[in-house]
Image (cartoon, rainbow, N blue to C red):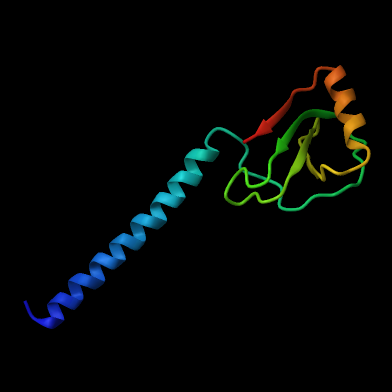
Length: 109
């Protein structure tokens, strides 16, 4: 085989390896998110939420590849979501009230 042919084979092998790596990351992310809401919090707020809440999820830091912050996600009755900073002063009281009225509080891991 000539040098040119060896070089072409090496480039093809490198390209295939790069695509396989990218495909594996995509599939891992897709499978990890299958069946749940794809959105996540990338930033949080300490502002209180006055809306009626139907569900609450704790998003742990680095739960998903793209979700790098620790947050509590409040889903309202009107299907809006709010990303709350775990250090918000009002959060423990609100979580207790939600628990008292049987609102499910889940942890996304």
